[in-house]
Length: 205
Image (cartoon, rainbow, N blue to C red; front, side, top):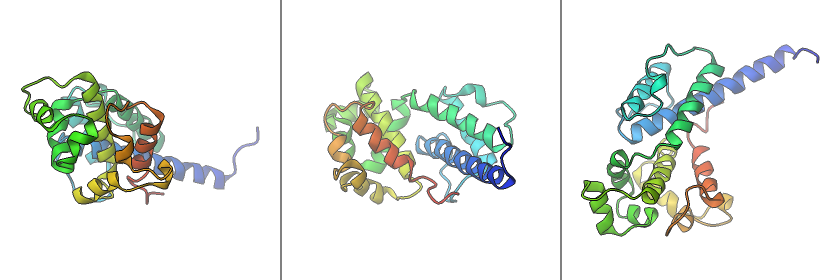
């Protein structure tokens, strides 16, 4: 196999850096959303903020193996770490940390989006009742979506985002898909999540 030309190597490096930056931003945005770290106003992220996000998530029991390691400085290794953390985050609903922040962002829309009554939501949020697994899974999917939207929209914009039709969703609004007893792993819901994930750091690269 012929060796790649220098221009190809340079493009590969740029692509790796852009993807690593995007994945790192998603980790930071999720940590900010659940208040594992303070929310920053600056666009983008840096290694120090990424490390802070890893430590914050570890306090919630997520990806603890990365909280004390000396992080590699190469784009590829940072990409691998961020992707592994995002995989762990995706598999780790944490309703106690998610009800409050999602309620502040989505307001009265949250109950309908997560598929519960307002009274049930209040009991789950206060801890009066344990959040059922299926509700926790929907809440977690919403948290992942909101964290990805946070770099592009303010709270008002995020609420509108769920209600506006999207060509990528075949003309449907996200709220049309995220209603009732929806399955976070369904193809339609994954399309909503993918649409949101592309927004964070879209200008990178």
